[in-house]
Length: 386
Image (cartoon, rainbow, N blue to C red; front, side):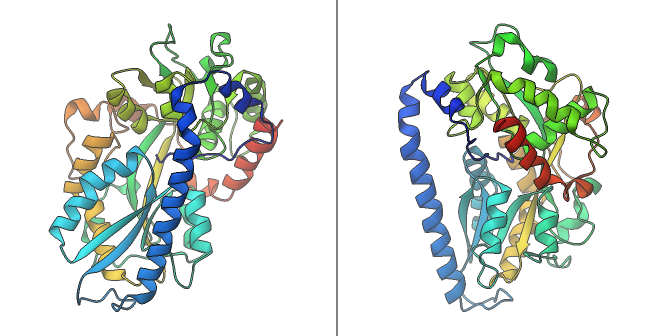
C-alpha cells in the first residue's frame, strides 16, 4: 500500500484542527519524519556510491559479493517485506545483499529515478501500476529477461506485464478505516463518509492513488462514467471538504486512526488489516457495499542498473510462490503467483477473498495512466485547496 502521502494543502485549517487534539504521539512526529527523510537520503547516497564503484559492471557480474538497492514503501510494508522476502532471499543468496530504501509513494520513486538516469539510485523499485507505465515509457525501467525471471510464467494473468516490464507484486483494495472505540456504528458505504457524526473526525489523504480510486468508486455510485466526466465525483468531494479534519495525517492514516487523532478515513485494506491485528482491533477496515477498486504495485528493474543479474534474481524471488505466501500471510496482500494457497482465514481478509473479488469495480489503468496526474491535480486544487 501501496501507502502514499499527499503534500499539504495550501490551507492550514486541517493542521490546526489536528493540533487541537494533542497527544504524546503527535509531539514525536516531526522528529520521526525528519529522521525518516535523513535516513532515506543517506541510504540513497550510499546506493549511488555503491553503484558507481561496483566492479560488477552493467551485467551484474558474478565475482564477489554484490549489494543491490531496493526502493519500497516505508512503515509496515518495509517491516513485512524485509522479514518475509529480503532476509530469506539473502540467506538463499549469500553473495547478494539487499539495501532497502524507504519511500513514501510512487511519485517520489519517479522523481528520484528521473534525476539519476545515468547513475540510478536503485536497482529494483516498487511502483503503483497507475504510474509505472510512465516510467516504462521514459525508459526508467528496463524489460525483464524471461529466462532470468522464470517465475513470470507462474503469475496470474492480471499480474503480467504486456510489454515485458515489471509485473505486479501485490494486489490490494481501497477501504474505509475507522476507530472501533470511537465510532459506535461502523460505516458500510462510501456515502457514510458524509455522515454528520464524522464531521471534523475525517482523515482523507486522497491527493494520490487513493483519491483516484475514490473518484472511480464515487462515479459508480453517481451512475457516471469516469472516462467521460469526473465532475460529478469532484463536486461530491467538494461537499465533504468542510468535514475533513486533515488531508495529511502524520505519520500515516493508519496510526492516526489507531491513536484516535481521527475516527474515520480512507486507506488500503492490507495495511488496515495489519493494523487491525497490531492495534488489538482498534483499527477496522471496511469494504463498502457498493464495491471497491483494486490497487496494484509492480516490481521493476531499473534501467542502467549496475547489478542487472542480481536484481532480476531478486525480482524472480519476490514473485515466487514461497515469498508471495510468506509476505501475504504477514501483510494481507493478495498473491500474484498462481501457485500460492493462503490460509483460509488470511485469504478472507485480502483482495483474494470471494467477497472482495465480486465487489471489485473494473478500472482501465492503462487508460487512466494518461489522466492520473490531472485527476490528482484536480483533487489538490478543487477539493483540498478549494
